[in-house]
Length: 379
Ligand code: PMP
Image (cartoon, rainbow, N blue to C red; front, side):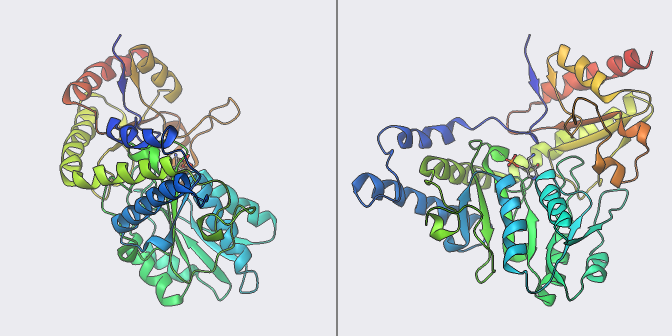
């Protein structure tokens, strides 16, 4: 049975051109970038070239980019690093109610340590209101975090407007850009970001490799101690091959971005219009236009999302509900509850995310199979 992949927001296959440029760093150019000898210098040069390329892609300076293990580390680093460096200024942090767990969990941890966390509500479409950010800021606020686009429902947030507010108040602004880097234009100045996180595997690069952008003069404590790699901001032997892979993956995305955006938007819009035409009792979640080109998210009445995923999987179609199972029991996603979706509908969620290798035939297959499956489950 041929399998069809509709879970690109979770992870994407690496592009073979990325793997090709990474290979030498496992064999012939395996040196430790911190070593002063020829092998080390070669690996260090590769890292610095990769850093320059990534910085250029997001409108940053090379010294503002550090390589790490991914956005979970980046978001933890930003939350813990800023809170420790701003201890004397205040203990108030503002985040949106729909941040990824890797940002929400460290914020929750800080709350237990006595920090006050304000969770910004979102509209039915999943949008944060910039005015509410403005209103929530106090003299004690040390960080604002709003993601560029939500990983479940695909809504793109008005991050540029929020960045102008935080800039005017001189408060560091963290943007989780995991779902947007490589997919839509990302520029740290246009977004007003002081910190920005990304993961290579979301844009056809290797897993376990990411980058954290830290604007010059932002005061932040190192997350990993025990070495002076990455200018002392992140200890541990540097992963030159990983950095080269991330940079190459991003370069490939940028080279063909408008075309990929157009193709994916066309396929996405087919899903968003055809599924409600062919199936009754379905709602679309997320904003209709301020939306990732590769995300379609639905909630079906009187259907269990898990059962639907299982039926799809049996037919070789791999999709997602958008949120992971908690301790075996499926709780409705907190993102869907935050947009005000009733519990019953939140249990019937289906996230379809497409990517570089999604074809018209894949979409046609889903459109053909899904109505019978939903009908079968309702029956
Ligand atoms: N933020 C968002 C919005 C994500 O979608 C993800 C991955 N699902 C992460 C952060 C964490 O990335 P990683 O698992 O690569 O560390």
